[in-house]
Image (cartoon, rainbow, N blue to C red):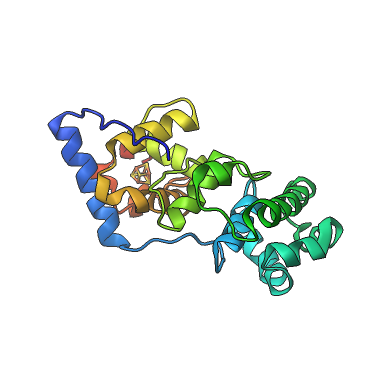
Length: 222
Ligand code: SF4
């Protein structure tokens, strides 16, 4: 498991702002969840692997039919790459994703006896599963608090001045260092959902934003 990020020193004012921000998110939604459909670690890994450069809605549409016929590594292998492609060809990068999902199903069967691994290093060793995918899976399964930084989290973290990192890795480090410990497992979802529905890329809805009073960027978008 990755070492926890050292707590970052914030001024008392900033510390209070960040604490108030995550308390507010908690009040607004106390149990945020991924919008991807899954029912066990295998279907979660597959859904997250399919979701790169695709919306959760697109992925759910495909996996509803896919998981009805192949929701285990054995069934996925039996379906094969060509069969799988038929279910996911509406999703970006589907050829690569089909190849990876078949390869990771084979590895889970051969190396892990058919049980999807839940240790970070084993997950990251699966074809097509990088650090971000592993973080989403581990966080969602409640195994390791992690904040996977996608485009929404990156943008919202900057606008809320939680990080000025230039890369997703740096933003992740900053978030892991300042998000209050009790909010760590849910922070990823709060920031994604906030970015998806309120703090949108082009026209953030600052007028309706429930954390506006805690956001240093609110004036920029009025
Ligand atoms: S006030 Fe505007 S910029 Fe700040 S978090 Fe809300 S929507 Fe985003």
